[in-house]
Image 1 (cartoon, rainbow, N blue to C red):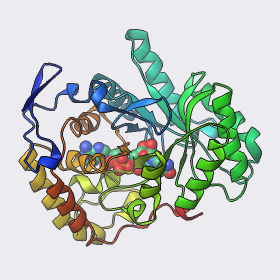
Image 2 (image 1 turned 120 degrees about the vertical axis):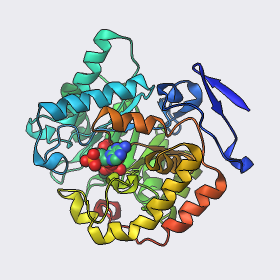
Image 3 (image 1 turned 90 degrees about the horizontal axis):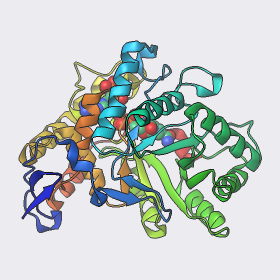
Image 4 (image 1 turned 90 degrees about the vertical axis):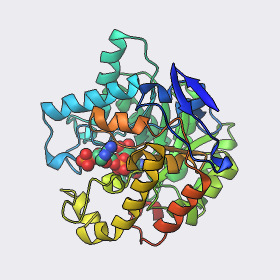
Length: 365
Ligand SMILES: NC(=O)c1ccc[n+]([C@@H]2O[C@H](COP(=O)([O-])OP(=O)(O)OC[C@H]3O[C@@H](n4cnc5c(N)ncnc54)[C@H](OP(=O)(O)O)[C@@H]3O)[C@@H](O)[C@H]2O)c1
């Protein structure tokens, strides 16, 4: 069966058919366009593309960018934003702590807001913005959520956002934070609310608390990739599916480790190098080689295969981080096709032989 999408022809087979897909199209920007490539975030009315773009690295000098931000990186980030929009991606994820916006330094929220405004001055673009509240220990009660949200608005240059998330569970004050999220919805400041790094138990409690006010908990953003499948083992994925909460997958390409770019002789620099060490990368190579081989059958890159693997889990929206237009364009090619079931399972089985890296400890708070 051939499907015409935006003037481009694809050889299309449903993944359950077990037949191989042949992506005839080039890395066309049109693959992410159209309603069939959009999903609702949980029980909310917010519709996003099946893949969003993570903006943590934009302006960040604490983890990314070798501790330096300059005009060249700024230009590349802007091009990543524009390439995403050109490719039909409408969903961007940021946070008040990305790039230390709280301290007034250049930050991801400011940059995202600027990119949106510059683009909207030229053409009508629809952008769904997700940002996050940092549950810092000195922040108490529901009021702190609304006050942080308003600060995010001022950095973003917006008067509302599509998704407001609790970035991680607080050491205390969590019920108040969830009340604050509900207040943000009721006051029309946000269209949907979610959490992040939430365990199954916390997720169910937050869901129940919001449900009493008639507000759906739209999403839980957690670390999820082919080599970090904790959400499958700790009940989070199953609870999301059961309750109709979208699982937003962060670090979906394992911070570059699953793309094939990093090898034992070429490990990533900076803090990433402490996680994805040459020893770990050596163990990863057989999996990366197989991902590459499988991708060749579909005319897809390893990056596109591992993102498609996540999308094939259903109810999962990956948000890979793009630092430049090439990376964003490659992500778009993860949409509009599906891995066959047997490839999905083979990759899971191969990946299960690799011990995952240690995740963000806040997942266990
Ligand atoms: N809620 C949370 O606690 C939390 C935690 C982490 C992340 N997040 C969110 O999730 C988003 C994505 O996660 P992440 O940034 O940690 O990891 P990721 O998306 O797995 O990896 C992104 C990095 O991979 C490299 N890369 C991107 N495209 C590539 C390509 N096509 N080929 C080769 N390398 C490529 C880039 O770094 P280089 O070019 O330098 O290699 C890029 O910065 C973040 O931006 C953020 O919005 C949320």
